[in-house]
Image 1: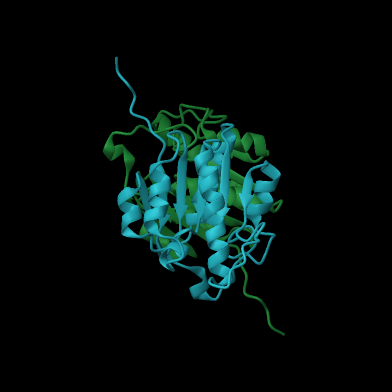
Image 2: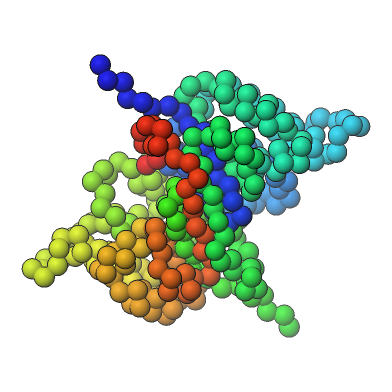
Length: 176
Length: 176
């Protein structure tokens, strides 16, 4: 009997180029098209609630959790940003561990890891012990080497040319 | 009076890594979320009509044209693949020139260009003379230098690690 080797993946989109969050959104869309369940959690502060992706997710009925949503964690020992990132990670852990999602996207999570707000070892432990059917997508610049080593699929988005260099502004529907 | 420098972009996702078509799909979703009009044309043969992205596009009501759709161009001088690619390009030109779309995605178009089936100069001429409001996204490996030079935004998706190397098969909802 041959057993097809198929397993849920840890996917990392990193690098200094455009397209990391965008590729995660593309995965969200493709999975949604197949009737799979997706949650996307953001680890970057988001002052503008009208991002195209949030509107789109709402229209799709896909769960998208901006950082700071339901934020109640008050501590004198933590900056507000760090506390929000830690809370977002707590929510992420519960989503991953629930096994209810086919794909959990941790958008821009490399930043709080690289700031030292989340321990890489803790993140990898949660990924390692996740239910076997759950794909996890992690995005952000400068993915730490330990995460790259643990991941199944890693793509580096490398900036070859960027229009802001030519003085062109970010545009709704294209950049955000 | 200050004029904001904003123009429709030529965006290229190239490189040997995963995420090129996926990032284009993410742009499609983000734009759809903002109520913009998007068309996505494929330049790769697609035997499996059940790709997650096609299902998703159908559910969104976004126009996605697989290569070979409505194919009627018969010629003794061209291979079937070349004729299909040329027809897809003819359809693409009409979509771009119509000005009806905010974003036109030419998925995997670098292949027919690199095969010599579409002349790079012709493609660039069409991009150069497009209506000023139309963003065009082009994807595929080995984007020719002339296209990179002409584009506004170029990201190279570089493969750092690929699960097929570890014997894991492509999976619905994740890879296609």
